[in-house]
Image 1: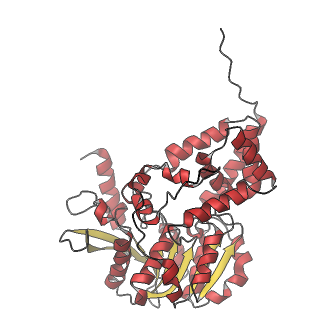
Image 2 (image 1 turned 180 degrees about the vertical axis):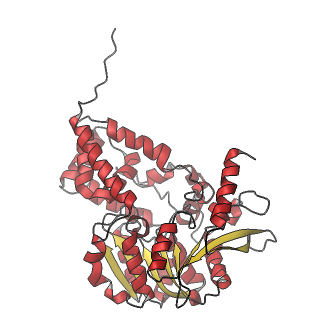
Image 3 (image 1 turned 30 degrees about the horizontal axis):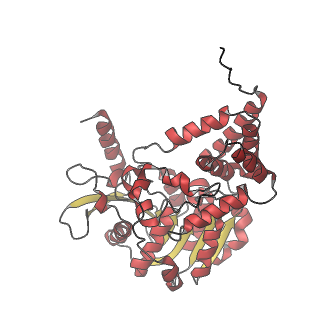
Length: 411
């Protein structure tokens, strides 16, 4: 056994010993006799209608990363269930210890896993909270197992394979079109060859953390020839941010789901700031788009349970326009927009996510729009606060340093 394998097995045993962690046997593929252990966790006081929380991805773990969130939910009296996505973390391997095959990793299989966990936990209906990619799984549960849904929260949601066009349009409206100083700076950098589609991930991250002012500060440095800070962020994005972290973020097996079934790569249009190029450059994009499992535009008008759609005003990953469209499709829906929030309220502003979940679980979802300002002011998660502080400090430091100039070679 390799050292990495030994560490993974030890961590697996530690997580298995956490209160509320259980597993069920699930088929590797539909109709197969092969089985694997699908893990899930249930915490908080049992009683009433529980909540199923589905994080984003594909690749996010459920059991290890959200321990603090579940403790806070339990303190609020919330009964929470989280399922470890097949192909990730504790649900990664079959009985032989091998990684699950590609054929096992489909959205419909994951949706059916959630329904099977509800059966095992003795739950008839649940409040289903899905964030980002998890929102598509939540909606998929509503399509395949509508009798299991008591209410739904779609946080920073996806709608369908054409979302890439909405994302691209939102990025260009902010960063390219119009007469804002931010757009003018991006245009100047693009013309100079100093900013391209590969930089959109960095720009979206800075904008989500600190808004237009913080992003403009960083881009002004780049325009002024102070490239070291931006180059460092390029390096971190390419080599650190997407790194596999056992039981927390494991997209190596399941990442292709987003490209094969949800068309994450989209269709490039050859114009500046094409967000599809940031996705198509990823290794998982090589699988190509095949087919979407659900037609949510056709199915969502049939959702008859209370649905809250949550969107962050600084979200350039699943922009507010997607949330607004979903609200138009779902009859019993309530839109909650947090102007200063980033992508995935579950991960960036989990105090607001808990308040929204508590309101929906208590049947008070109609009161949420009036609480928008209060929800928006709730503290962000520590990593968001620290990230914004670090970016602001780095910009101040970079502005104080002399510009880096390449030494001309001597003849």
